[in-house]
Structure formats: structure tokens, C-alpha cells
Length: 396
Image 1: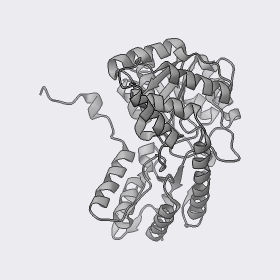
Image 2 (image 1 turned 180 degrees about the vertical axis):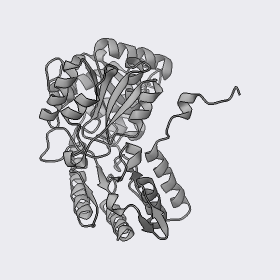
Image 3 (image 1 turned 135 degrees about the horizontal axis):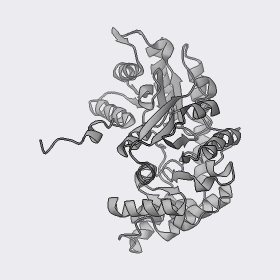
């Protein structure tokens, strides 16, 4: 039939995080009390000086098309931040501003991957990674990591996954969904293999500003000489400045790759929102106390989450070095009855937890790791306390 959906879209898995959030909203609309720990976005308002910059941009007439790859002011602000924070010397022409980091990832995969190319993705991984790779016709090669290794890909696992068809390694540090992070030394070991096997690396560093005391963040492109030539850095303002809805992300890449992504975007979406781009300039160049304040609150919530997980028999998680997630091991609580319903996998566990106790989480299977559930602690301490009380009652 002419209206048949394409095979590549039929094979596309919907976002589990969005689906769980939608289910939580549905229950709330029906009058249920729901504690939503599913969505990964800061529960803070965008700082006032950033909002004011958007208003000023509108009044100044910045409401028209921009260059497809982003306004010069924002590209320059990104370049300046990477020079100041990481000592990386990029040119504005190497920056491509996109409609959020997810769009930036899609751009990178689309311009770099051909059908049949293989992309190594450590699991657990963010739900969209494998699906975005599949959209290009390339093949996601999932490598299961271990909780005992804090869910970090080991050099041995990396070497073992490389084939003649491997083109790219995809890393996220700090990680969604686990909160774990690679040390500079661990990144260096992976970089050595990427250089030896002549591989590209896409480094999703969207949580780089949300790193907890005692841990050191390193941008992948800094850990060995020559890495910027084979690395695409992905970042944005969504998590750092509570700007998820503004939809501004970017890549830093070799100039010819950035040019290709700009050309793609010119046909795909024209430009990112002009007003949001000016707001992002204010975010990068303005006062950063808002970031420190938000991180301080996440530090308090993280400590509470660690305490509660440790206090519930049969639950555990890896150390959260950054981001605002806990990836909870629930394996001891599978294969049993909950309110007369037998639960054998993480999807069933999360759905019954929501149905019976009103707590929305995301099943580990959506992240490529069965036997786990992800919670986001980007919510108030009161909400976390109530949610963990319900989780404790559910499993005990």
C-alpha cells in the first residue's frame, strides 16, 4: 500500500523515558498521586538572566532565520568556553549548533556513517543512541559493561568488539543512565585503541558541568595528542542551565565534518531557534553561580538517594560521579509476585511499581541492561523521600 510505513521507521523503538513520563502524566490526570522519577531534566527554572536575554533578543529583532549552523556569537562563546575549561583550540567554523544534543548526535551519525558501518556502544546506554545509529543504516554493536566496573567499558572489551567494519566508538561521560564517569587515565586507554585502529569517537559530554566532589572530568579530546582530528564532541545548554525546552546543543568537530553537518542542517531544519541561540550566549558568557547552586542541590539529593538505596535490602547501584541518575540493580526482586502479579523483568517491575505505588522509573532493558531500573533525582527531596518510601514498601 502507498501508506505503508518504511521498514527503517517500523524497526525504530520509541523512547522509553518519554513513554514512562507520558504514562505518569496520564495517571496524574486521572487523579492518582504520582512520584515521577523518569525524565532526565533539571527541575529548576531557567535562570532569569538567560530568560531576559531571550526577551532582549526578541525586542532587538532577532526573530528571523540565522545561519543554518548557528549564529557567530554562539559559536564564538562555545569556542571560548572550551579553550578556558579544557585548553582546546577550536575555530568557530568547527562548531555546529543544533536543535539540542540529540539532534547534534543525529547530525554526526548521518554525515559520518554508511550502511553496514559498526558503532561500538557500551551498555547501559542512553535510549536514543542505538536507534539514531540504526536510522543511518549502520549497526550498533552493544558491549555489556559490569556494575563492578562502574559500568565503564574496559580496554579489553573495546579491543574485543572492534572488527573490520568498526568505524566509531560512542561514549557518554558522565553517563546517562548510570551516573558513572571515566577518569582521564581510563579515557586515555580507550583513546590509544581508537588511534591504533583508526576509529572515530563521538563523546557525549552533556553532563560535564554536573560532576560531584571527588571526581575529575576530562573532555575526551584532551587525553591524547591528535584526538580532536578524530573526535566529535557533543554538548549543549539543556542540563547545565535547565534549558531542556530551549533546544540548543552543538558539536565540535574537524572542519570538514562541521561543514557537512551544517549543509545537512540547512536542508533538514534550517536553523536552531534564533531566540534560543541568543539565550544560550547569555548562558555561556553570563554568571555561572546558577550552575554551582544547582549542583549543590544535586549533591544533597545524591547523598539521600545513596542512603536510601543502601537501606533497602536487595537494591544496589554503582557510584554516581556525575549527572543526576541512579541505575538501581533490582535483580534480587525479580521472579516474584507483586500484588498477585508475577514480575520477571525490569519492564514489568517498573510498570507494576507505577501502577501499584505511583512511582515512575525507567526499565533497564530500555538502556540495554536487563535487571535494572533508572531513577532521576532531578526532583525535590520531598518527592524523593515519598518515592523511596513507596519503593521500599513495594519490594519489602
